[in-house]
Image 1 (cartoon, rainbow, N blue to C red):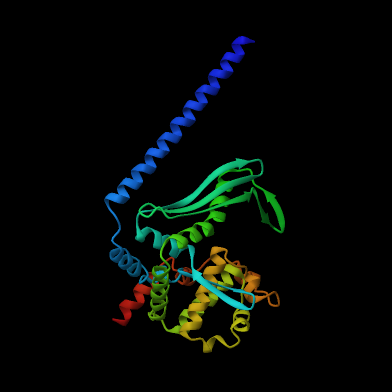
Image 2: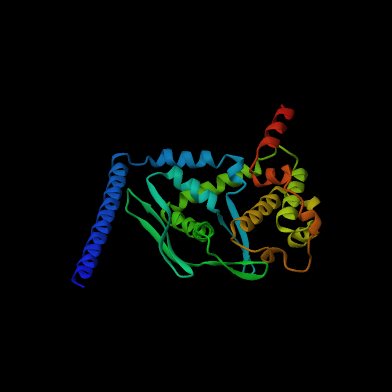
Length: 288
């Protein structure tokens, strides 16, 4: 009995030493990050220019903003993709998601963004049940990979909020304005062709028909302006990022043709999402 007790105490002591060593190592890493940030402080002017230059890329501008209805008004703002670009180009930021604890049936996670120069920090702790809806039913997750992806998806919007809480608001506003300018000047294709690409993407990805889009805007797509096209992209980004649901925009009165929506994603859809720029490059060559 004494031998078992001695072994237990030894294991407890060993575990404590390992935990203490791990905490000490993490502390040294944090000190190293702070030291490097102080040694190489950001040049605010250069950081702002890097951000604005990035916003001139059409592939980023197409995914930079979201838009969804709330209480009879329209809410717009920087998307998760734009927040990541802001953090990367602002510099000396530490941001991400950490799984604090994994319990039976749920994970406790933390999203954070920390300015290593000014010691300004935003942090959000949240719970993620290990389940998701599939086919109208709640499915319990047991695969570690599925759980990891679920936590990451739930944490993405919270990381976005943390980043936007650390980076100065005027820098964020300038980035949003620059993305809007980029979209307004994206005239590689005629507006009617770009609108057609958008309608096709909505139908294939979210089973939203042209009639539903026209009902949402209140007039025929032939009357769409550049502003309407930008709003259409913002709605698409909101659905893609999980900021809103299809019913928030289009209601449940009309349904799309399922056979058409089940076709493989076309190059037109990929172009609308900004995943490929092949069509844009070819259009520039022909207009030259």
